[in-house]
Length: 590
Image (cartoon, rainbow, N blue to C red; front, side, top):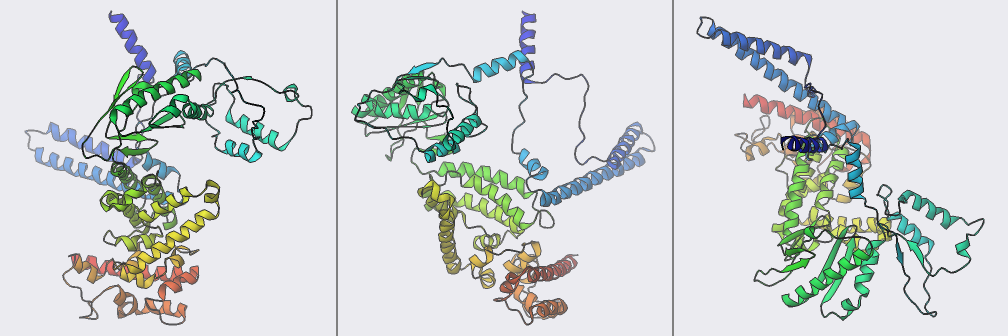
């Protein structure tokens, strides 16, 4: 009994873990250096001496030495971590999707599974995942001679090839998708030098094996054309996407829905068995969608399993609730987007790190999480309480892209980042989905983005928030369509008015007075510092000399957009001014 138990445990461990060599080998952490190793040895030595000096005259001195050594070790580790992380952030500017991105995103994933090493275990896994299906003879449906089936065009053949992934596993026929694409391209563009024998005579039936890409359409046609479906009083619809099957049944009474659903499930199971496939009944989920105030449930029979309806299910990545409000979906994706934003924010510090254009690519990662399935839950954006958290996460990602203060308004943040608000992006994705797929690849994308910019500009002109930014950037299109210029930490303070200005610091209770120390009692706000304060006359004169005249809030952004030289001059001016203001603030705090 004990031997059998140990043998079973050994097989289980071999299947899930790698065998160790008996020696403990730990890789050094990324911040480990020889100096830290020396500090650690000194700390351990001081600890041993302190422990041996208990109840002796030198105990106090030894403990003090140990405290100093431990403090030095902590300081060395902290400095090394800061230095290594800064190097990682700087590397993100050279390789935006390289090691820094993979490092921070790996924290969001679980531990990697261990590949089995036993050959017998590998064979069992492959045979279970890819079972051999018996070759079936599929009879062609009977038809009259007057019926004419249209030929498959070259465009349809190429479209079907585009929808097939190259790296997907082949079907039971064993033919890789790359080979099918190559054969389709050859037969569509060339001709046979010697026609095959099957091309000389009509074929009544052929021996085929159902592939992965063929059975979904076959199942849908089977269910839709079945006499029971056409005779049913309930509305029955079957949709298949890869290995997911969705049955939609519409009726007024639960009894009729239950009877129709049980028959439809049996029909699907029978159709799949004819194709050599079977369903995982224990994974079946039931959702009862109703507008009634009374909470109801239904239990359906799927094979040997009784499935009770649940308030919410996840289908193809979208969480569908029983009221079709999609508030649960927005809640789930907001939590996921918050984790992604938190991980990527570490690569986007205020000083250093990747440039603004690379940061916007990281923002698009958050957008891809939030906007998944947007045409499905578009109506949920009409309720502000549903979309409020998602908008906050989207704003947080845009703030990191421009290195801005968190007190900047939503409207100004999106304008400075060049990213439309989340609600407008959802509306744009929905409009693109409604248009044809071919149009969406061409002019439709630019047309819908033009409509989004028009709505965005209307909101930007009508809002009462971010008025200083609106004075500088009245036209959103001119700002986001520029061909040069990167926004940084100091330039964002100039464009937003939120920074080391005493008026802002006093409003946030970080300073006791809002007056300029040189021009008392004039308020030290962004306009006074940039355009009027005599403390920065020399820096301002250099900028005016390049502009061949005076600059005003309404003209400075236009001057920056003229060419890259003007942009860099304005950015350098903002860096000098904001660095000086930051030094004065630190001096006042001492």
